[in-house]
Image (cartoon, rainbow, N blue to C red):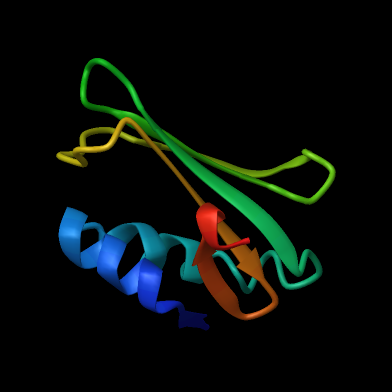
Length: 90
């Protein structure tokens, strides 16, 4: 997998390389779904949900993060083939 410059900047700014590691770690399961939308939604109790969907909105992966110091309430990244990019880059 490769990440774009914008993803590198985002991960550095928000200290969330773990998020992109997580996305990459699921790719062996999702190799048939070459386009994915990954959304992290932080909850008020500092937990978070990470949900991966295919291009039709079908949930592929849903994982709870028990506790995070992630500063952003929501982030969305895309996987297109072997590239991880921010949704704003689409």
